[in-house]
Length: 595
Image (cartoon, helix red, strand yellow):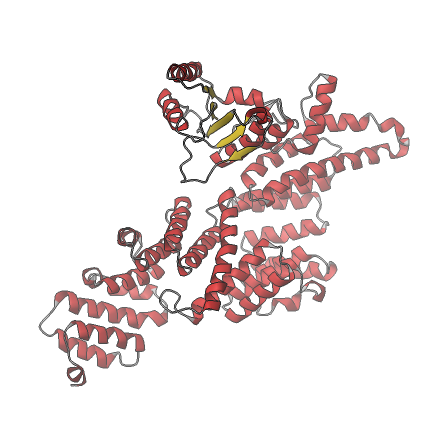
């Protein structure tokens, strides 16, 4: 029931949102602090929330929250199973409530009562209830805090409106009508000549507050939640609303669409937004963004450069200019085009890290990442950059899978792991966990866990990432490696089978196959696959395939073929190592190799 839009509360679409909002609701209902139990995968005995009714420790209440897809309601067997689990909860519950986003069901309500009577006959006094969404919706409507928890569009103005409605005992159709009506009632107190301007200004102030509230959802990783709120607000706008407000709402709609991966629609929406306020510095920045989304990077760079000459404090423009420069080979020092006063700003440093990383400036991006994080220690994105720089540095300086790491390196890895853990948690709580940058974070976090000695946790992290993006190549590659290196043969074998025979994946498959002696797999590979590899990997790859054919087929001239390969590939150190191992496998003596 949004106080700004309609009289109905929409069901949460995921179990996490349902549990979080239910925590607020049952705190109000029980008049007691409510505790959310455990995490996914832990045994909770059919209980998500617990609290003491009216603060009475003798009356412990357990609540189970079941988020169901439309048309997928709970069945009698579901209720029985959940009650059976709740009866095992310790300390014993005095009341158990099974709630669901599914429909109310009189049969389940009566079954709950019947199960409570059965327990009483057995000597246990426990209240058992079933509450579908219709019942829950009526409960939620009694508590403003619960309304706000279940409906982000309610917000601070919704609370004010709700209080007014109770006092006046009437309803209006939309929040915007309430705001306009309230402002018009004050118009007589203003000079006539200024009335229209004052009313418009007041309307903008009210709408700015609403937009800021909706935008918070976007900034917290909830674009799917924010998008319909912005769209509904734009549809409700009255003529009195300014073009600046229209621009703000449209631009936020475009950013929601972009975060949700709909780039084409996002570009069109941003272009429409700019039309409302073409001279506004923020609108110009969004015009640059629209060009970048359409991959017109030169035009984006040129526009940003021109506008930065006029608006030398526009940090967002500078950010987009450096982002566009990543795709322009002729630009190797983008800071030359950014006003000096912006060089040490947060957004500019963040984009500079991305630029140097994309150009292969290894030490440069490490240093910039650490500098940015030290200047802005509270920024989570920059903190993540610095953590990834630590991992990248140590991985290049050592073989993290096999080398003995110093105590200082291990401490650095542990700190990086903890930072990435926070980032991965934010991603899982967001509405866009399968974004490429999110999946990269997953892979890096798992690497840190693995190197820190917790391979089981690393595998769990990677499998969670793959649950969001089952075909993500880098995640599958890392899972195969971590599983192999940790001795988890079943997972390693399963991951191996899913990897494609190309690019980075084929390199990993060959590495694992060689270590495990899977010569049959290597022997059947097409030598043309070498073309999909970087130049530096091609000779070792061809050598490995040649060795595999010898070790798998065991031809009579196998030793002769190995001696010829040793001579042919003498200039490749990695090939020489592989051939030495093959010679050992064939029982060739050192003097034979010299013959």
